[in-house]
Amino acid sequence: METVLNLLLIRFGLIAGGLVVLGLVVFGVAVSLRRRGKGDRVRDGVATAARFAGRVLDERHTGGSRARRGGGLGNRFAREAVRRIDDSVTRRDR
Image 1 (cartoon, rainbow, N blue to C red):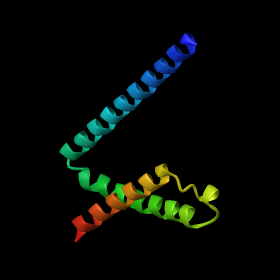
Image 2 (image 1 turned 30 degrees about the vertical axis):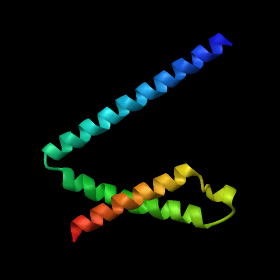
Image 3 (image 1 turned 30 degrees about the horizontal axis):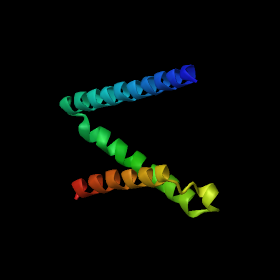
Image 4 (image 1 turned 120 degrees about the vertical axis):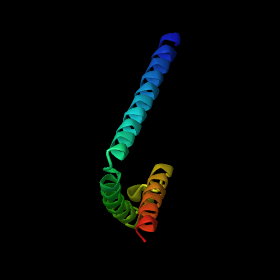
């Protein structure tokens, strides 16, 4: 039993560490692009991807049964994040 718990703890540590490193890399790339003046191009690309992802998630959410449409917390969170990114870019363009 102790061995299983140790393996689970090690697995959790590796996953958490990987997510932290991935976050730092993404943050570093964002800062680098912003300093080079390419932030607007990236923001436009993210806006396009956010609109596409929003349409895909909304289509998935509106059709079929609850099991098929995946109405879980993860999908709701992803849809809200996509909408916020899309709204912030739209407000900036006005």
